[in-house]
Every structure is written in structure tokens, then in C-alpha cells.
Image (cartoon, rainbow, N blue to C red; front, side):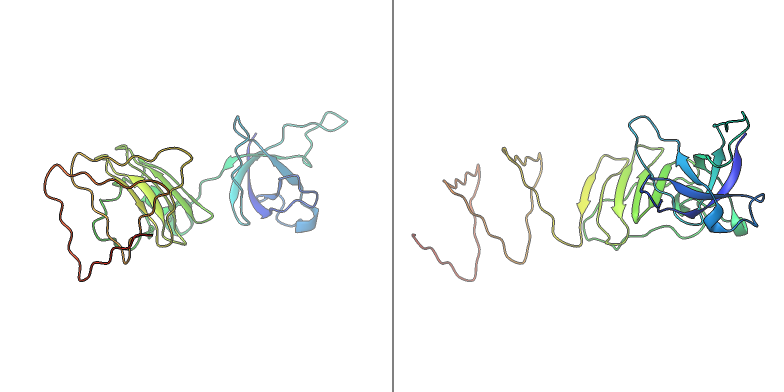
Length: 217
């Protein structure tokens, strides 16, 4: 039988990756220090999603004590418990359509974000990481604290947006090819090669600058 419980502690004293739980309402009068530490039911591959204090979860008691009775000292967390305090579900606003979801700053030229459909999309928002997989095939993962995001909308447009540095580093070749225009814009642009640099244009090669400075060195 599953019981609803609340997380009251998340740092196991021996580092065993367990969470301290209070079964509701049965253990309401039990001091926090006397509550048991529950293990997690993990998916195959042992992916770990941490709980935080105050989270509501479902627990089971799969173990028996030496007398063959249910051992309430060894609960197991089997999932999150749904709730709606004040009529607002305890899921990300993007999932429920209630409350204020995350809205990133506008970026000139950026394609539209995936179209969110309340109650239809996969949404998880924890530790400032928001991941959305929309019913229409869009995807976005974002650092909601920093504002950086990578995504693909339902039309297949892909974007990488970062308010800080973006680094691309490859041990092999890097190829950029487009059936249309390629635009590069920045405050200053530096191109460096340990070997040759070759420019080839099928049409006009045009350069415009306030000054030209060519040096051999």
C-alpha cells in the first residue's frame, strides 16, 4: 500500500542518497530526528532526481522486520505525489497552464520557442534546469537562472542562445554549410590559422572597411 509523505531531510548522515520522510498524517507528531530515511526506487540505469524539503512523495514499505511484520523504519520512495494547494498544481506552470511560467529575454533574430500545450507536454523544472518536450515535437532545455537555452521548435528551427560565452571545440574537423546565407557578426572578429587561409567566391568578393592594414609576418 502506498502512503503519502513529505520530505523533511535530504542529506543522509552516511551519504547513502536517501531522503527523510514524514508519512501524512500518521507521523505528524513525530520529531524530525526520529523519522526514517527512505531509499529511492530508481529507474534502470540508476538515474537520480533529488527531492527537496517540502516535496510530497508516495512511499511504500516493502521490507519486513524480524517478526515478519511491515518494517516502517525502511520506507521506499516510489514517486512524486500530486497536489494543488490553492488550486495551483504542484508541477511546473508550463505543464499545468496555471501560474507564471519561465519567459526568457527576447533575442533579436531568434526563432520561436516550442509551443507549450498545458497538460500535453513533458515538463520538468528542477535545480534551475527546465526541460520541455512538446506534444508537437518541440524541445528546449534551459538554465532559467542564467538564461541560456538550446532548443528546436516544431518547425525544426534550432537555436543555441547564451548570455555568456559559447565555446565550440572539436578534435576533428568543423564544417558549417548552409543552402542559404551565412551571417557572422560581432564587436571584433579574429580568424587565425596555423596553416593556410583560402577564400573562394563564385561571385563578387567584396570587402568594406574604414582602414586596411596588411602585414607580412
